[in-house]
Length: 303
Image 1 (cartoon, rainbow, N blue to C red):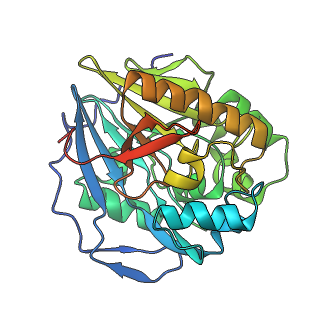
Image 2 (cartoon, rainbow, N blue to C red):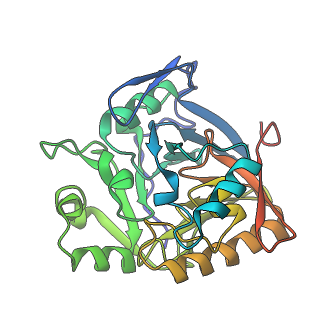
Image 3 (cartoon, rainbow, N blue to C red):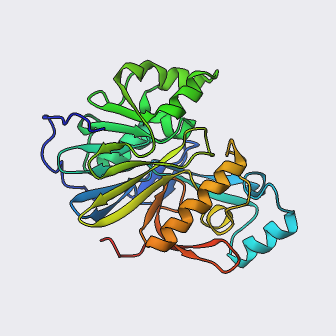
């Protein structure tokens, strides 16, 4: 499926501004010395990750590794220099500028954090031509509108998975009903394998939610995978894909999706961006002898 191109967008959009010195945290406090965006080049695409928010969450073993004993969780964490007292969560929407469209993948916890990061990256909310929602958890749909229901990206068309939308539409969920349902008439619904536009293809990553999808970007003979919430921690999910995650609605299906797509990333050596990976959210996957994977953070490969 190809989407209609908007004529109002200036070609290439605005040049990025200098990164802001701080970013608002999800709990309303400010964190110093944290960049709010990072640009990457993928062929003819400009890809920008946005740090829309970050927060510390206590007792990570109540979220990750639900099916392993505390001693194992402690041992793995210590070996990777991780505290088991708290984990730092990152919330990272991604902008893909194709030169003709400016496409935003997910919208953060609220409009404020996301639009501030967009502006720091050189974009305004009205320049977004398409908003793609990978799944309907609140930290991905929260930026669609403010508490009064005012639409954040008023010039945008919306794209999401048919399976995902139908599952949430049949449930009773205040966030979905407030943020997503009012936009239904502006939405296009797609299936795995469909194109958002040429070079941007939906990929089945079901399990975290019923219709959770990632998106494969391809331009200039290169690939980059937007994995959304396929894996939410570089050790406790990527390195140990069978470890259960509290927020995965179908834990077995989520683990199967992680292993299938991590195998693909390791074999084909393409980078990926994770919504909750340490900012700027991009890394590579290498196989690990114990049947898991090793996350290699991006350094300068796509500058």
